Figure 1 (cartoon, one colour):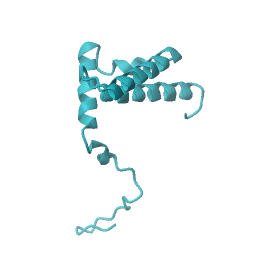
Figure 2 (figure 1 turned 90 degrees about the horizontal axis):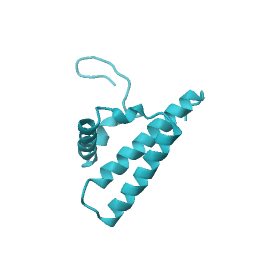
Figure 3 (figure 1 turned 135 degrees about the horizontal axis):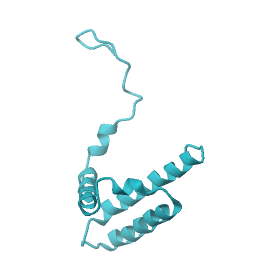
Length: 104
């Protein structure tokens, strides 16, 4: 790709579009959820999780919040909590895989 200035760059057509994750309400709702957790515990406290016990806790919490979201409970943002716990689960899963020498 050539710009009017003459600068040349590889095309972006086959690159991941990270900017698209900000469309819709999810990112703000997740940020609010993470902020509440940071105030209650510490920023990035969830990233200390490292074992099977934490992995299972993330899964249990994701399922509980999913049912609360499906039921229409409005006492907290259960959808953001589902996403948070799924992310935590995947974070720990990847960490455990790396310890075993794998990628996933």
